Length: 185
Ligand code: GRF
Image 1 (tube, rainbow, N blue to C red):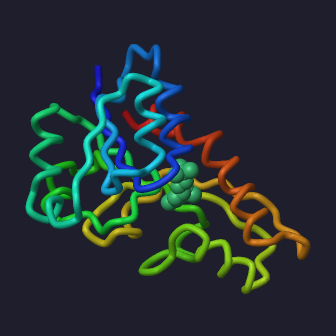
Image 2: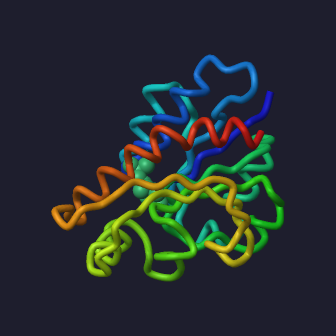
Image 3: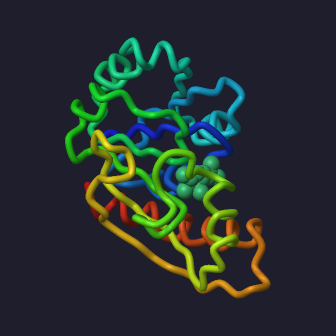
């Protein structure tokens, strides 16, 4: 049985889909949901699934507290699901090819610094793209540059707004992320 930790900073709708997917799994369990935001809704979602939670500040993470916790909990895989802080290098090194992130666009487009959440969808809209999508990738020291393991796309029209783009992207994320994780384990 693989032990997974989910790191998330916000609402956690992806985290919820992942918890749902692995609820009765014989392959993996979600052993921890960790957040840098004490009021993140993802923590409420974790409670619903009886998944233990852990909160920490950026300073504590940079000082190694999160890594310590992940080791203590014997975590095998780390899932980033809307986690907004830059991961310390020690942490990426502790989970070589065992840390996975979801990015709400078709990398290498719309990745890198400042490209998160609504900023991504606004940039996609401003560029008049005819499609967008999701990228699931392993995490290495250069955040958005780890090996891509999965992409899926969705068409856009000129009628789409950043909000409707976000909705389309979320639907793709919810559909694919849990299964892609399972495939990686
Ligand atoms: C997702 O769009 C994910 O790709 C991104 O942050 C968003 C998190 O959404 N990096 P949620 O918290 O899972 O609802």
